[in-house]
Image (cartoon, rainbow, N blue to C red; front, side):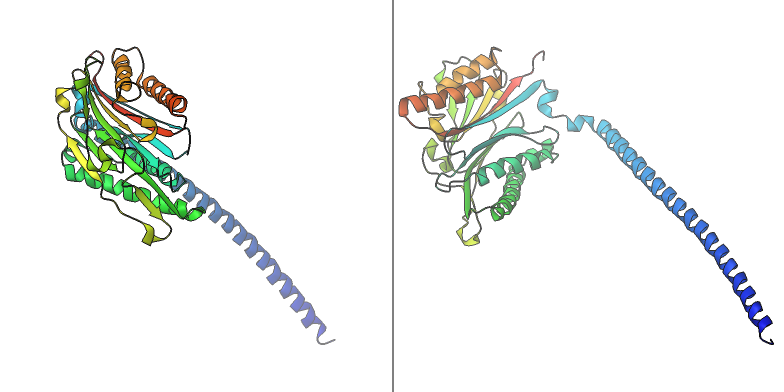
Length: 344
């Protein structure tokens, strides 16, 4: 009997404490909700700040570009010229050729590249990756006149792009069953005043002056030791990448600059580059360079587009090779056309 009231008092105390604890828990729950709301608000504000930052940066870039408008417009554009480019590949046999058009971010320089996978390797990893990586990475770079005027800078840039492509080739090679991949590489670029030639391996490269299509003297070949004077067959050099570094061979690229473009632009000038497939640019009137020159004259007269000329010439040449020589071949052709802009 003495302890009963004490027990009853303990129960009351427990109830009171329990009630207060529940109130505290409810209060803490409200605080948690408020914190969650605040966190959501903070995140929302963070996103809004990010969006504002993007807008501010975009406006700063736009303003900066407006202030530097004179410097980001290529000189050939300001002087009323334009550069058209087109490249195409027809794989009629080994499926190892590849091609691409090239330009930097602000079109200070434009051009084409063609690649011919080495037949004995029997895969197209190198040729495909070279065209994809070089065209993509060059398109992300902003060049200026002052950079292009330094031959060493341009050569270093192209060397860098090739090395970047080789990294990607190694990556793709590691995913495949192939142990080795190799391809020739021909790049032709122009800023409207100079032509830059960069080659590793054999192929064709010509500067064609505008004017009458029957003027054979207008056909001026670019000769390089690396191209074996346009010889066909196995390449003397190539971009070679292997899973075993001991099997890799580094060939020194041929690099040259031609400065005589201003004398030809009024009539139009063409830089023509091709792989050695299908006797594509042999200097004959039956199959080869002369036929292409006649077709380019039609483009200059406005009768055909550059795309139509290249596609038509590739198709006709490969068909002739199949019919007259009885074999199939791969071929890539790229053309850079420097011309007076219409209405200028």
